[in-house]
Image (cartoon, rainbow, N blue to C red):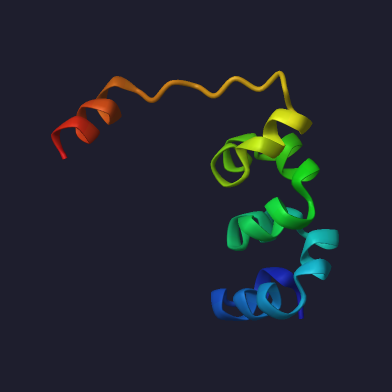
Length: 85
């Protein structure tokens, strides 16, 4: 069986029971399914590859691992939506 043949449910099962394996072999998948796992156990990876996620989950760690990261401003239409909503 290949990774591409797995269903969403099967990937979720692996993420729940073997997150370390996914982190070692397919970190991008685990970063989507369980971003908080990365924030807790591999914040350096998130800081390098998905700093926007670390900025939300663990902003204090982002300041340590990526002090140069500047979070982009939201587009005007999103800000308008938030003000109206």
